[in-house]
Amino acid sequence: MWTGRLQGGVRRERRMNPGTSGIHHVTAITADAQRNIDFYCGVLGLRLVKVTVNFDDPRSFHLYYGDGMGRPGTVLTFFEWPRIPGGRIGPPQVTATALEVPAGSLGYWEERLRGAGVEVSGPVERFGEGVLRFEDPDGTAVEIVGVGASAGEAWEAGPVPVEHAVRGFHSVTISEEGHEGTAGALTGLMGFELAGEEGGRFRYRAAGDGGVGAAVDVVCAPDARHGLMGGGVVHHVAFRARDEGEQARRRERIAGAGLNVSPVMDRTYFKSIYFREPGGVLFEIATDGPGFAVDEGVEALGTGLMLPARYEGLRGEIEERWKRLRLPGEGGR
Image (cartoon, rainbow, N blue to C red; front, side, top):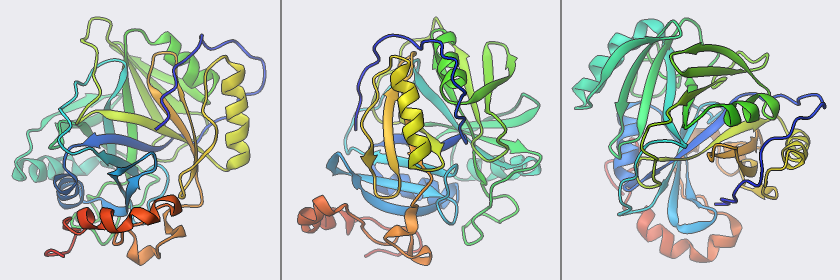
C-alpha cells in the first residue's frame, strides 16, 4: 500500500472543482479473518463480495463486504495481518465508520447487537439523527445511524430482515488536532461542502450528492492522544471517481496543490490513486468500475479465492490458508 507523505499544504486554486460522489470504500485492519467474517456477515448482515489478497502484500487476505453487488458507497474492507498488535484510535485517523439503516430500525439493532454480546452506547442524537456506537472484535469503531430515507439498497438475501438491513455508508469521522487543513482538502480538492457544525464536529457533504456515503465529519481533538496503526484501526478511506478521466483530473488537481500523489494503480475492481491530506490521513480516489463482478458472477460473489495475475504462482500456498476459512453459509470446507 502506497503511504507517501505530504509535501506542503493545499494551495488556493481558481479552477472549477471537479466534485466527488462521496465515499467509495473504507479499509481497516483485522488480526483474524474468520472472526471478522463472522461479525460483519453474521452480526451486521453484510455480504462478503470478495476474498483476495492485499495487492501489495500477498501474505495478507483482503476481505470486502458490501451490499448485494458491492456497489461503491457500501464497501467496507479489511486487511488481515495475523497476530498484529492492537492499534490505538486517535488523531490523525478515521476514528469511526458509520453505516446507515432506516430511522425506525435503531431499536432492532440495539437488541441485535446486545444479543450478540456487543457492548453498545447510545442512541445519541447527532445532526438530528440517532446514532448507536460499538466496536467490532478488533476494536474498530463502528456506528449505525438511523436515517429518514436512504438511497442505498438492502441485501435481501442476508441474515438481517430487509426492512432493518444496512443500506451502505452514512459517513466517516476523521479526528484531527485542528480541522482547517483537512477541511481545505475536502472543500478545495474533493468537492465537499460544509453542511453544519456541532460542538467541534464539522460535517461536510458531497456537493449535489444525495447517495450513500455522502458525508464526512471532521472532529477537532487537539488534546487527544495520537493514534497508532494496528489491529482495529482504519488504514485509509477511499472516495469515488466516476471513471478514469475524472480520476486523472482529480490527480492533476491534487498534484497541483503541492501534495504527493501516487501513480494510478490497478486494483482489478477499480483503479486507485493515493495521497495524504494535510492532517495526515491516507486518502484514496477509486473509480466506480469495473466492479466486483469482473471475475465472479453476481450470484457467486465472495465464494472463491480471487488473485491478481501476478500472484497466481502463489495460489497453492495461499489456498492452504484460504481453505481454513469458513465462509458465510458454509459448515466448513
